[in-house]
Image (cartoon, rainbow, N blue to C red):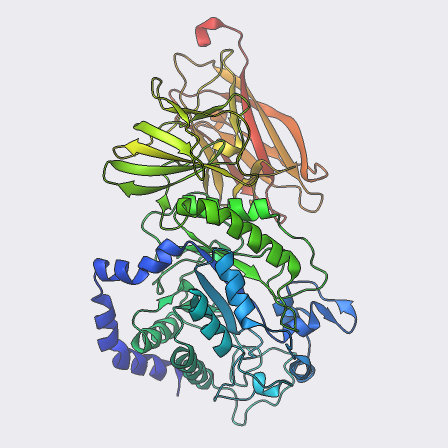
Length: 602
């Protein structure tokens, strides 16, 4: 059947179902999404025969993440198949996995039923590239589903659309040396196979979430995505599906591209947290604990428990979910480093969970010292302030908050927190030391709706305008990075991204300013050009070239020229012009220093 005929038949057959799905009201959607929105924290599990290789082939480390080793190493499919004969997870304890997830505070779990190599963790009726080839010949999904039900963890499945070993999948890899089908490859035959497998896993395991991936190759179309999502919803109307079922995902940032037909229920940022909240859109950040998804023996670059807990807080403060990954070994063991971090997260959530579960994005775009989540109450809102940077002077300014804080205390204790509502905005006053090494939480009752006024940055007493990365607005993929040798705008890999600060200049500004910028750049990628702008005229911008500073964490301060001040500028913008390397720079701060030492211009 040709592609055109497939599309026409799919449209005819699925039109009634599509109309029914479109009839879902906002209230019905809210009811369907309720548990997922309240969950906030889930466990991702990447597991398959690639765990046998553990990142190595023929005694050599293969660059890249573990589950991609077949493609990264260009391993012939016939030789890769031998991994199944060595995949014997005799130490697999599904009850222990589900119990660990529950104790870590995860409300749901998503495990790979099939990754891009096509190997299935259950005995599929659609072929034999599955657990039937392994020494134990066991269904690995059913006992985990049952254990999740026992421990109160919602069960979900990841299922790859891309399939490197299926005979009819296109594009066919050059290193796939398995026999090609007689009569040539027919992608429609692969689509039927995929639909049959999806029906199997829904009927067999009743997943609460279906997490698709591998949709980006050109053979998978918008029409294919619509048809697959329609099949899923017909089989289980209450299921929650990610946006990778279709073609609208905008790269690793994971949200749907403007103008594209979006399907699925939530966006999927990968290895990153959006710079700010995305009101009205459900999204979930998926992230590794180290550098790889599937198990890689040599990967010991573990994120700290503090980093993971603060990432969970950051995600919740912006209204998203956090899906944190573990990669079990071929024997069926979750690495001890992963277990330790999950237990640390569970211990923190046991005390502070009410500040995460069921909360909404906080009203603050930025807090210099931490994050905020909220939930409504009859008198206004309950605010949860997560303190990352304990203030030396004991003052936590709630910058821009146009509301009154009635009472506050340290969550998990009876210790009250002093409140000062006399100034432009409330100030919380704390003393002593943090009650938790990862994040201390203050719970506060806010009278009325917690509105936060936009903040504009002003010059200091001598007229200098100092602007820091942590206070910047970012449009695009780039984002603020915290931590040692960071504290900057990083991940600036797209030349279309811009960074800006809203400003306010009381009185008259000086006519000219020198522009100083503090940044870092790795030796592998210097040479980007960028501009600092305060207006549209050519004299209201200065252009410079990023130099090699010796590393992403080695910051230098550079005077890049002078700029003329326009009338009443509203923002200062840094934008890339060219990007010959992998990234523009890591931007820490901008300083504009008046050239005239004249009180008239202060």
